[in-house]
Length: 124
Image (cartoon, rainbow, N blue to C red; front, side, top):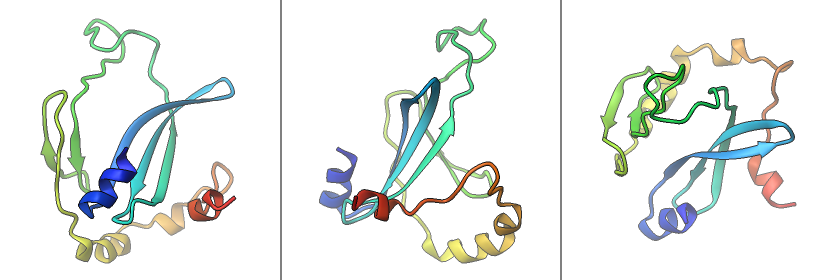
């Protein structure tokens, strides 16, 4: 559905989180769909919350269920209450300056994870 909407509206969509089990582990998956509707990137992070029900304010972890759009330096660009959609333009001119200010290449942990070419995986 996200792929179709991205293509139809000629926009880039970041969608998630989508829970997915792999073996005995549970992951949150986030997908980026380009203006052509194709999957451009996928991020998978280990789900580490407790098994307590969401919205149980007495639990150790509380899921609030609202959406936020956050910039690369943790600036909140937009936020909304539950069951709402956030739409925003992406300022692509900020990509290179932000990358230069973040030492990500120096901090890469190849012993923990590896980068995978999503387009190559999708062509299999």
